[in-house]
Length: 235
Length: 235
Image 1 (tube, rainbow over the protein chains, first blue to last red):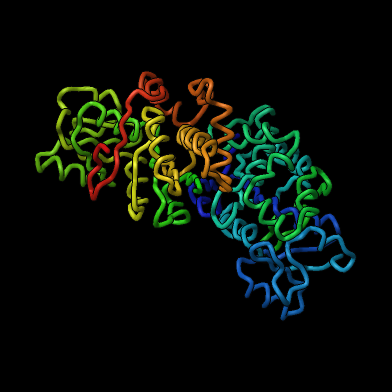
Image 2 (cartoon, each protein chain N blue to C red; image 1 turned 180 degrees about the vertical axis):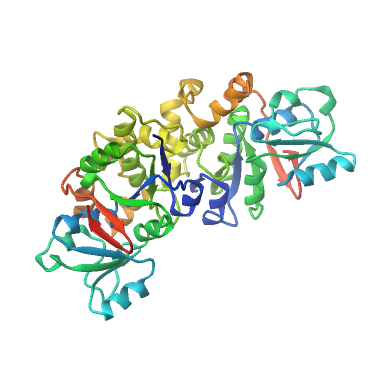
Protein backbone atom coordinates (compact mmCIF):
# COMPACT_ATOMS: atom_id res chain seq x y z
CA UNK A 1 0.00 0.00 0.00
CA UNK A 2 1.25 3.39 -0.99
CA UNK A 3 1.17 6.63 1.02
CA UNK A 4 1.13 10.01 -0.69
CA UNK A 5 0.92 13.54 0.66
CA UNK A 6 -0.83 16.28 -1.28
CA UNK A 7 0.23 19.67 0.11
CA UNK A 8 -2.60 21.81 -1.23
CA UNK A 9 -6.25 21.22 -2.21
CA UNK A 10 -5.66 22.55 -5.74
CA UNK A 11 -3.17 19.74 -6.41
CA UNK A 12 -5.58 16.94 -5.40
CA UNK A 13 -6.39 15.99 -9.00
CA UNK A 14 -2.72 15.01 -9.47
CA UNK A 15 -3.04 12.44 -6.68
CA UNK A 16 -6.55 11.05 -7.04
CA UNK A 17 -6.90 7.27 -7.16
CA UNK A 18 -10.34 5.68 -7.12
CA UNK A 19 -9.62 3.19 -4.36
CA UNK A 20 -7.46 5.28 -2.03
CA UNK A 21 -8.59 6.59 1.35
CA UNK A 22 -8.27 10.36 1.65
CA UNK A 23 -7.41 11.95 4.99
CA UNK A 24 -8.21 15.67 5.08
CA UNK A 25 -5.95 17.61 7.46
CA UNK A 26 -6.40 21.17 8.72
CA UNK A 27 -4.68 21.22 12.10
CA UNK A 28 -5.27 24.97 12.70
CA UNK A 29 -8.22 24.51 13.08
CA UNK A 30 -11.02 23.06 10.97
CA UNK A 31 -10.31 19.35 11.30
CA UNK A 32 -9.31 19.75 14.96
CA UNK A 33 -12.68 21.43 15.51
CA UNK A 34 -14.56 18.67 13.65
CA UNK A 35 -12.94 15.92 15.68
CA UNK A 36 -13.70 17.85 18.86
CA UNK A 37 -17.30 18.37 17.76
CA UNK A 38 -17.96 14.65 17.24
CA UNK A 39 -16.18 13.81 20.48
CA UNK A 40 -18.59 16.18 22.19
CA UNK A 41 -21.68 14.59 20.74
CA UNK A 42 -22.40 16.47 17.53
CA UNK A 43 -24.59 14.21 15.39
CA UNK A 44 -23.60 15.28 11.87
CA UNK A 45 -21.73 18.08 10.13
CA UNK A 46 -22.26 19.42 6.62
CA UNK A 47 -19.01 20.86 5.23
CA UNK A 48 -19.73 23.51 2.59
CA UNK A 49 -17.35 25.56 0.47
CA UNK A 50 -19.01 28.96 0.77
CA UNK A 51 -20.28 31.11 3.63
CA UNK A 52 -23.50 31.63 1.64
CA UNK A 53 -24.23 27.91 1.74
CA UNK A 54 -23.66 27.86 5.49
CA UNK A 55 -26.05 30.81 5.81
CA UNK A 56 -28.64 28.98 3.75
CA UNK A 57 -28.52 26.00 6.13
CA UNK A 58 -28.80 28.41 9.05
CA UNK A 59 -31.94 29.94 7.55
CA UNK A 60 -33.35 26.44 7.34
CA UNK A 61 -32.92 25.90 11.06
CA UNK A 62 -29.52 24.21 11.24
CA UNK A 63 -26.74 25.29 13.56
CA UNK A 64 -24.00 26.81 11.40
CA UNK A 65 -20.30 27.61 11.67
CA UNK A 66 -18.29 29.91 9.42
CA UNK A 67 -14.73 31.16 9.58
CA UNK A 68 -12.58 33.17 7.21
CA UNK A 69 -8.99 34.28 7.86
CA UNK A 70 -9.03 32.92 11.40
CA UNK A 71 -12.13 34.76 12.56
CA UNK A 72 -15.72 33.70 13.13
CA UNK A 73 -18.06 35.40 10.68
CA UNK A 74 -20.70 37.69 12.12
CA UNK A 75 -24.11 36.16 12.38
CA UNK A 76 -22.84 32.63 13.00
CA UNK A 77 -22.90 30.79 16.33
CA UNK A 78 -19.64 28.95 15.75
CA UNK A 79 -16.33 29.41 13.97
CA UNK A 80 -13.53 26.87 13.79
CA UNK A 81 -12.26 27.14 17.36
CA UNK A 82 -12.44 23.65 18.90
CA UNK A 83 -13.45 25.26 22.20
CA UNK A 84 -16.72 26.39 20.63
CA UNK A 85 -17.68 22.74 20.27
CA UNK A 86 -17.01 21.72 23.88
CA UNK A 87 -20.51 22.65 24.83
CA UNK A 88 -23.76 20.89 25.61
CA UNK A 89 -25.60 23.05 23.13
CA UNK A 90 -23.98 21.14 20.21
CA UNK A 91 -25.02 17.70 21.47
CA UNK A 92 -27.11 15.77 18.96
CA UNK A 93 -27.06 18.69 16.51
CA UNK A 94 -26.40 18.83 12.78
CA UNK A 95 -23.97 21.67 12.03
CA UNK A 96 -23.19 23.18 8.63
CA UNK A 97 -19.60 24.47 8.47
CA UNK A 98 -17.51 26.53 6.06
CA UNK A 99 -13.87 27.47 6.72
CA UNK A 100 -11.01 29.17 4.86
CA UNK A 101 -9.09 26.00 4.04
CA UNK A 102 -10.41 22.82 5.65
CA UNK A 103 -13.79 22.64 3.96
CA UNK A 104 -12.11 23.60 0.66
CA UNK A 105 -9.86 20.54 1.01
CA UNK A 106 -12.92 18.33 1.54
CA UNK A 107 -14.55 19.93 -1.50
CA UNK A 108 -11.42 19.30 -3.63
CA UNK A 109 -11.34 15.61 -2.75
CA UNK A 110 -15.07 14.86 -3.21
CA UNK A 111 -14.26 12.29 -5.89
CA UNK A 112 -12.49 10.07 -3.33
CA UNK A 113 -14.22 6.82 -2.44
CA UNK A 114 -13.65 7.51 1.27
CA UNK A 115 -12.78 10.75 3.08
CA UNK A 116 -11.87 10.78 6.76
CA UNK A 117 -10.87 13.67 8.99
CA UNK A 118 -7.44 13.82 10.62
CA UNK A 119 -5.77 15.95 13.29
CA UNK A 120 -3.38 15.40 16.15
CA UNK A 121 -6.47 15.07 18.37
CA UNK A 122 -7.42 11.72 16.80
CA UNK A 123 -3.93 10.62 15.72
CA UNK A 124 -3.75 7.07 17.12
CA UNK A 125 -7.27 5.89 16.27
CA UNK A 126 -6.89 7.30 12.77
CA UNK A 127 -3.51 5.58 12.22
CA UNK A 128 -4.85 2.26 13.49
CA UNK A 129 -7.89 2.57 11.23
CA UNK A 130 -5.74 3.30 8.15
CA UNK A 131 -3.46 0.38 8.96
CA UNK A 132 -6.42 -1.97 9.20
CA UNK A 133 -7.94 -0.88 5.87
CA UNK A 134 -4.92 -2.06 3.85
CA UNK A 135 -5.54 0.50 1.12
CA UNK A 136 -3.54 3.30 -0.48
CA UNK A 137 -3.66 6.50 1.58
CA UNK A 138 -3.65 10.08 0.30
CA UNK A 139 -3.06 12.67 3.00
CA UNK A 140 -4.56 15.97 1.81
CA UNK A 141 -3.25 19.03 3.63
CA UNK A 142 -5.61 21.99 3.64
CA UNK A 143 -2.67 24.41 3.69
CA UNK A 144 -3.35 28.15 3.64
CA UNK A 145 -5.17 29.42 0.58
CA UNK A 146 -3.52 26.79 -1.58
CA UNK A 147 -0.05 27.41 -0.18
CA UNK A 148 1.91 24.75 1.72
CA UNK A 149 1.73 24.98 5.50
CA UNK A 150 3.85 23.44 8.20
CA UNK A 151 1.35 22.20 10.78
CA UNK A 152 -0.67 20.08 8.34
CA UNK A 153 2.59 18.73 6.91
CA UNK A 154 3.74 17.68 10.39
CA UNK A 155 0.56 15.68 10.93
CA UNK A 156 0.89 14.11 7.47
CA UNK A 157 4.44 13.20 8.51
CA UNK A 158 3.18 11.62 11.76
CA UNK A 159 0.80 9.37 9.81
CA UNK A 160 3.48 8.53 7.22
CA UNK A 161 5.91 7.68 10.03
CA UNK A 162 3.36 5.34 11.64
CA UNK A 163 2.25 3.57 8.47
CA UNK A 164 5.68 3.11 6.87
CA UNK A 165 6.81 1.35 10.03
CA UNK A 166 3.94 -1.18 9.48
CA UNK A 167 4.22 -4.08 7.11
CA UNK A 168 2.77 -3.55 3.65
CA UNK A 169 2.96 0.25 3.64
CA UNK A 170 5.62 2.25 1.86
CA UNK A 171 6.08 5.51 0.00
CA UNK A 172 8.07 6.83 -2.91
CA UNK A 173 6.29 10.17 -2.77
CA UNK A 174 8.70 13.05 -2.15
CA UNK A 175 6.17 15.08 -0.19
CA UNK A 176 5.48 12.10 2.10
CA UNK A 177 9.23 11.63 2.64
CA UNK A 178 9.72 15.34 3.37
CA UNK A 179 6.75 15.37 5.77
CA UNK A 180 8.17 12.41 7.65
CA UNK A 181 11.58 14.09 8.01
CA UNK A 182 9.94 17.28 9.28
CA UNK A 183 7.74 15.39 11.75
CA UNK A 184 10.77 13.56 13.15
CA UNK A 185 12.54 16.89 13.60
CA UNK A 186 9.51 18.42 15.29
CA UNK A 187 7.85 15.65 17.27
CA UNK A 188 9.50 16.27 20.62
CA UNK A 189 8.10 19.81 20.73
CA UNK A 190 5.62 20.60 17.98
CA UNK A 191 4.77 23.90 19.61
CA UNK A 192 8.37 25.14 19.61
CA UNK A 193 8.99 23.84 16.08
CA UNK A 194 6.06 25.86 14.80
CA UNK A 195 7.07 29.00 16.66
CA UNK A 196 7.92 30.94 13.50
CA UNK A 197 5.43 29.32 11.16
CA UNK A 198 3.07 31.58 9.27
CA UNK A 199 -0.27 30.34 10.53
CA UNK A 200 0.76 29.96 14.14
CA UNK A 201 1.71 33.64 14.06
CA UNK A 202 -1.51 34.52 12.28
CA UNK A 203 -3.46 32.86 15.12
CA UNK A 204 -1.23 34.28 17.85
CA UNK A 205 -2.13 37.77 16.61
CA UNK A 206 -5.78 36.84 17.10
CA UNK A 207 -4.91 35.75 20.65
CA UNK A 208 -5.56 32.06 20.02
CA UNK A 209 -2.61 30.54 21.90
CA UNK A 210 -4.97 28.24 23.80
CA UNK A 211 -6.34 26.86 20.53
CA UNK A 212 -2.82 26.29 19.19
CA UNK A 213 -1.71 24.31 22.23
CA UNK A 214 -4.91 22.25 22.22
CA UNK A 215 -4.68 21.42 18.50
CA UNK A 216 -1.11 20.15 18.95
CA UNK A 217 -1.93 17.79 21.83
CA UNK A 218 -2.30 14.23 20.55
CA UNK A 219 -5.19 11.87 21.17
CA UNK A 220 -7.62 14.00 23.10
CA UNK A 221 -10.59 13.00 20.94
CA UNK A 222 -10.41 9.36 19.81
CA UNK A 223 -13.10 9.55 17.11
CA UNK A 224 -12.94 9.42 13.30
CA UNK A 225 -15.32 11.63 11.32
CA UNK A 226 -16.04 10.19 7.87
CA UNK A 227 -17.93 11.63 4.87
CA UNK A 228 -21.20 9.88 4.00
CA UNK A 229 -22.83 11.67 1.12
CA UNK A 230 -22.97 15.34 2.06
CA UNK A 231 -22.61 14.58 5.77
CA UNK A 232 -19.68 14.07 8.07
CA UNK A 233 -20.61 11.44 10.64
CA UNK A 234 -18.79 9.61 13.41
CA UNK A 235 -17.43 6.29 12.24
CA UNK B 1 13.69 41.53 2.13
CA UNK B 2 11.46 38.50 2.10
CA UNK B 3 12.24 35.00 0.83
CA UNK B 4 9.50 32.69 -0.38
CA UNK B 5 9.58 29.20 -1.86
CA UNK B 6 7.03 28.10 -4.44
CA UNK B 7 7.05 24.30 -4.69
CA UNK B 8 5.39 23.88 -8.08
CA UNK B 9 5.09 25.98 -11.24
CA UNK B 10 1.29 25.90 -11.11
CA UNK B 11 1.32 27.74 -7.78
CA UNK B 12 3.50 30.62 -9.02
CA UNK B 13 0.55 33.01 -9.38
CA UNK B 14 0.03 32.79 -5.60
CA UNK B 15 3.56 34.14 -5.03
CA UNK B 16 4.08 36.67 -7.81
CA UNK B 17 5.31 40.12 -6.79
CA UNK B 18 6.28 42.66 -9.42
CA UNK B 19 9.62 43.59 -7.92
CA UNK B 20 10.84 40.19 -6.70
CA UNK B 21 13.67 38.23 -8.28
CA UNK B 22 12.63 34.74 -9.33
CA UNK B 23 15.12 31.86 -9.16
CA UNK B 24 14.02 28.85 -11.23
CA UNK B 25 15.32 25.55 -9.86
CA UNK B 26 15.33 22.16 -11.58
CA UNK B 27 18.28 20.32 -10.06
CA UNK B 28 17.63 17.02 -11.95
CA UNK B 29 18.48 18.31 -14.55
CA UNK B 30 17.29 21.27 -16.61
CA UNK B 31 18.79 24.14 -14.62
CA UNK B 32 21.95 22.14 -13.91
CA UNK B 33 22.27 21.62 -17.67
CA UNK B 34 21.69 25.34 -18.38
CA UNK B 35 24.34 26.44 -15.94
CA UNK B 36 26.74 23.88 -17.40
CA UNK B 37 25.93 25.06 -20.93
CA UNK B 38 26.80 28.69 -20.21
CA UNK B 39 29.91 27.67 -18.31
CA UNK B 40 30.98 25.80 -21.43
CA UNK B 41 30.51 28.75 -23.73
CA UNK B 42 26.94 28.53 -25.01
CA UNK B 43 25.97 31.99 -26.21
CA UNK B 44 22.19 32.00 -25.59
CA UNK B 45 19.43 29.55 -24.82
CA UNK B 46 15.75 29.82 -25.73
CA UNK B 47 13.60 27.97 -23.18
CA UNK B 48 10.31 26.86 -24.73
CA UNK B 49 7.35 25.03 -23.22
CA UNK B 50 6.65 22.53 -25.99
CA UNK B 51 8.73 20.06 -27.99
CA UNK B 52 7.07 21.43 -31.15
CA UNK B 53 8.51 24.87 -30.50
CA UNK B 54 11.96 23.38 -30.02
CA UNK B 55 11.55 21.51 -33.32
CA UNK B 56 10.52 24.73 -35.05
CA UNK B 57 13.75 26.40 -33.92
CA UNK B 58 15.69 23.36 -35.09
CA UNK B 59 14.13 23.64 -38.55
CA UNK B 60 15.27 27.24 -38.62
CA UNK B 61 18.87 26.24 -38.09
CA UNK B 62 19.24 26.46 -34.31
CA UNK B 63 20.72 23.75 -32.13
CA UNK B 64 17.89 22.28 -30.07
CA UNK B 65 17.44 20.24 -26.91
CA UNK B 66 14.34 18.35 -25.81
CA UNK B 67 13.65 16.00 -22.95
CA UNK B 68 10.51 14.35 -21.59
CA UNK B 69 10.34 11.94 -18.65
CA UNK B 70 14.11 11.87 -18.27
CA UNK B 71 14.92 10.91 -21.87
CA UNK B 72 16.22 12.86 -24.84
CA UNK B 73 13.60 13.05 -27.58
CA UNK B 74 14.47 11.44 -30.89
CA UNK B 75 15.61 13.82 -33.56
CA UNK B 76 17.26 16.25 -31.10
CA UNK B 77 20.99 16.70 -30.57
CA UNK B 78 20.71 17.38 -26.86
CA UNK B 79 18.52 16.49 -23.89
CA UNK B 80 18.92 17.80 -20.36
CA UNK B 81 22.01 15.86 -19.35
CA UNK B 82 24.66 18.40 -18.30
CA UNK B 83 27.31 16.17 -19.87
CA UNK B 84 25.82 16.87 -23.30
CA UNK B 85 26.84 20.50 -22.89
CA UNK B 86 30.48 19.85 -21.98
CA UNK B 87 31.44 19.88 -25.59
CA UNK B 88 33.13 22.24 -28.00
CA UNK B 89 30.28 21.90 -30.46
CA UNK B 90 28.03 24.04 -28.20
CA UNK B 91 30.52 26.93 -27.95
CA UNK B 92 29.06 30.22 -29.18
CA UNK B 93 25.78 28.54 -30.13
CA UNK B 94 22.17 29.53 -29.50
CA UNK B 95 20.23 26.51 -28.22
CA UNK B 96 16.44 26.14 -27.97
CA UNK B 97 15.44 23.87 -25.08
CA UNK B 98 12.24 22.22 -23.82
CA UNK B 99 12.15 19.94 -20.76
CA UNK B 100 9.51 18.15 -18.67
CA UNK B 101 9.61 20.54 -15.73
CA UNK B 102 12.34 23.20 -15.86
CA UNK B 103 11.20 25.11 -18.91
CA UNK B 104 7.61 24.88 -17.61
CA UNK B 105 8.72 26.66 -14.44
CA UNK B 106 10.32 29.42 -16.52
CA UNK B 107 7.11 29.67 -18.54
CA UNK B 108 5.00 29.91 -15.37
CA UNK B 109 7.08 32.78 -13.99
CA UNK B 110 7.32 34.86 -17.21
CA UNK B 111 5.60 37.80 -15.46
CA UNK B 112 8.54 38.20 -13.08
CA UNK B 113 10.69 41.28 -13.54
CA UNK B 114 13.85 39.18 -13.33
CA UNK B 115 14.33 35.41 -13.71
CA UNK B 116 17.67 33.76 -12.95
CA UNK B 117 18.64 30.10 -13.08
CA UNK B 118 19.73 28.23 -9.95
CA UNK B 119 21.30 24.85 -9.20
CA UNK B 120 23.89 23.48 -6.82
CA UNK B 121 26.41 24.02 -9.63
CA UNK B 122 26.19 27.82 -9.31
CA UNK B 123 25.17 27.97 -5.65
CA UNK B 124 27.67 30.49 -4.24
CA UNK B 125 27.69 33.02 -7.08
CA UNK B 126 23.90 32.92 -7.15
CA UNK B 127 23.58 33.46 -3.38
CA UNK B 128 26.05 36.35 -3.47
CA UNK B 129 24.18 37.93 -6.39
CA UNK B 130 20.83 37.67 -4.57
CA UNK B 131 22.31 39.14 -1.41
CA UNK B 132 23.68 42.11 -3.34
CA UNK B 133 20.36 42.88 -5.09
CA UNK B 134 18.55 43.60 -1.82
CA UNK B 135 15.20 42.56 -3.26
CA UNK B 136 12.53 40.03 -2.35
CA UNK B 137 13.37 36.56 -3.65
CA UNK B 138 10.94 33.89 -4.89
CA UNK B 139 12.52 30.46 -5.31
CA UNK B 140 10.44 28.53 -7.86
CA UNK B 141 10.95 24.78 -7.77
CA UNK B 142 10.21 23.00 -11.04
CA UNK B 143 9.10 19.88 -9.15
CA UNK B 144 7.86 16.88 -11.13
CA UNK B 145 4.76 17.48 -13.24
CA UNK B 146 3.47 19.99 -10.70
CA UNK B 147 4.18 17.78 -7.72
CA UNK B 148 6.63 18.72 -4.97
CA UNK B 149 10.11 17.24 -5.28
CA UNK B 150 12.91 16.88 -2.81
CA UNK B 151 16.02 17.89 -4.74
CA UNK B 152 14.69 21.29 -5.83
CA UNK B 153 13.45 21.87 -2.28
CA UNK B 154 16.93 21.15 -0.90
CA UNK B 155 18.47 23.77 -3.16
CA UNK B 156 15.74 26.27 -2.23
CA UNK B 157 16.64 25.50 1.39
CA UNK B 158 20.33 26.13 0.72
CA UNK B 159 19.56 29.59 -0.66
CA UNK B 160 17.13 30.32 2.19
CA UNK B 161 19.77 29.24 4.71
CA UNK B 162 22.35 31.55 3.13
CA UNK B 163 20.12 34.60 2.79
CA UNK B 164 18.40 34.42 6.18
CA UNK B 165 21.83 34.45 7.81
CA UNK B 166 22.51 37.79 6.03
CA UNK B 167 21.24 41.08 7.38
CA UNK B 168 18.02 42.36 5.90
CA UNK B 169 16.68 38.98 4.72
CA UNK B 170 14.02 36.97 6.52
CA UNK B 171 11.12 34.67 5.84
CA UNK B 172 7.73 33.88 7.29
CA UNK B 173 6.92 31.53 4.42
CA UNK B 174 6.25 27.98 5.64
CA UNK B 175 7.66 26.37 2.50
CA UNK B 176 10.89 28.36 2.89
CA UNK B 177 11.14 27.32 6.55
CA UNK B 178 10.51 23.66 5.66
CA UNK B 179 13.07 23.79 2.84
CA UNK B 180 15.67 25.21 5.18
CA UNK B 181 15.06 22.47 7.76
CA UNK B 182 15.33 19.79 5.07
CA UNK B 183 18.54 21.30 3.65
CA UNK B 184 20.12 21.36 7.09
CA UNK B 185 19.21 17.69 7.55
CA UNK B 186 20.61 16.78 4.14
CA UNK B 187 23.59 19.05 3.54
CA UNK B 188 26.32 16.75 4.80
CA UNK B 189 25.37 14.12 2.24
CA UNK B 190 22.81 15.26 -0.31
CA UNK B 191 23.32 12.09 -2.32
CA UNK B 192 22.47 9.78 0.60
CA UNK B 193 19.56 11.97 1.71
CA UNK B 194 17.99 11.67 -1.73
CA UNK B 195 18.55 7.91 -1.94
CA UNK B 196 14.84 7.07 -1.79
CA UNK B 197 13.49 10.19 -3.49
CA UNK B 198 11.23 9.69 -6.46
CA UNK B 199 13.20 11.47 -9.16
CA UNK B 200 16.58 10.16 -8.14
CA UNK B 201 15.16 6.65 -8.55
CA UNK B 202 13.55 7.61 -11.84
CA UNK B 203 16.98 8.71 -13.12
CA UNK B 204 18.80 5.74 -11.59
CA UNK B 205 16.54 3.47 -13.65
CA UNK B 206 17.74 5.34 -16.73
CA UNK B 207 21.32 4.70 -15.61
CA UNK B 208 22.06 8.36 -14.89
CA UNK B 209 24.00 8.02 -11.63
CA UNK B 210 26.83 10.11 -13.05
CA UNK B 211 24.39 12.95 -13.77
CA UNK B 212 22.94 12.74 -10.26
CA UNK B 213 26.35 12.99 -8.58
CA UNK B 214 27.39 15.88 -10.81
CA UNK B 215 24.17 17.85 -10.25
CA UNK B 216 24.62 17.59 -6.47
CA UNK B 217 28.22 18.87 -6.45
CA UNK B 218 28.28 22.55 -5.49
CA UNK B 219 29.97 25.36 -7.36
CA UNK B 220 31.33 23.64 -10.42
CA UNK B 221 29.98 26.30 -12.80
CA UNK B 222 30.14 29.81 -11.32
CA UNK B 223 27.87 31.53 -13.85
CA UNK B 224 24.35 32.95 -13.59
CA UNK B 225 22.00 32.54 -16.54
CA UNK B 226 19.36 35.28 -16.66
CA UNK B 227 16.29 35.76 -18.87
CA UNK B 228 16.42 38.69 -21.29
CA UNK B 229 13.29 38.73 -23.40
CA UNK B 230 12.96 35.25 -24.85
CA UNK B 231 16.64 34.46 -24.30
CA UNK B 232 18.63 33.08 -21.43
CA UNK B 233 22.03 34.77 -21.40
CA UNK B 234 25.04 34.73 -19.12
CA UNK B 235 24.93 37.57 -16.63
